[in-house]
Amino acid sequence: MPDLKPTQRVLITAGGSGIGEAIAESFLNNGSKVHICDINEKILNGCLQKHIGLRGSVTDVGNPADVENLVTEALNWMGGVDVLINNAGIGGPNSNLEDISYRDWDRTISVNLNGMFYCIKNIAKTMKSQKSGCIINISTASAKVALPGRSPYVASKVGVLGLTHTVAREYGPFGIRCNAILPGLINNERGRGILSNHAKEKNIDFEEAEKNFLKYISLRTWIDPSEVGELSVFLASPAGRHITGQQIGMDGNVEWEI
Image (cartoon, rainbow, N blue to C red; front, side):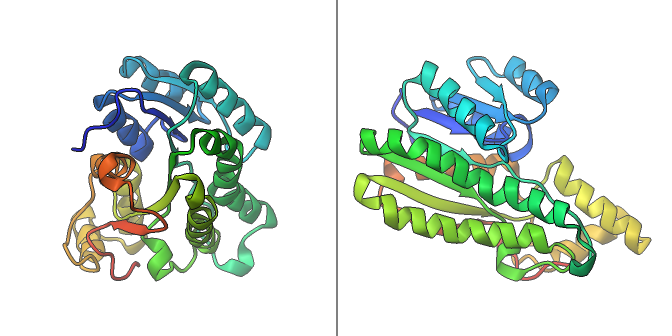
């Protein structure tokens, strides 16, 4: 894994569990200062107790005031932010589009897309003054293939790609890079839960559900959360200094989804 500057300062949203925690652990292992947030105080506190040196805030990224407080708290102890990882996201409703409530649609867009805008907006001036910065937005492989019944989720994550490309162009002259990572089938509680629900709906066992999903992935593989962490570390390292405006799949090449 590439070495980072010892003083690299990293802010990660939804870092209390799952992919976010794996990203935080990867940066901590490289000597970075890391500040995370999570909407769930219990999950946040458990993560902070587990990882020495990690700090965090209770934050709903869909609330602009919460994000403003998060950035202030992170800047107060780190003195700046070199890397912003926009990881927070929710699955949203699983329903035909005409049956989705306005509230569910708005909440999914608010967390998954608006939340990234709020974070970038509040950290942009700091990165511009530093004349450097790395922003990594977590999208999804579903943004490439679409997913019936998940319109708010997919729309929000496709929006993340547009935001990523625009930020890369707008802030590139200030030495700020922005890329998107598109994870595939993640081998964690949430990923296994998706397969368990599929198995229940189809009245099949977990192994059969796994075959149904993996046959549409070229490498026929799950993705370990640590792989997303390692890719994030690489993109933020000197080795990734000229990579920007890219959407990078960490998915084994998802060809289709069911």
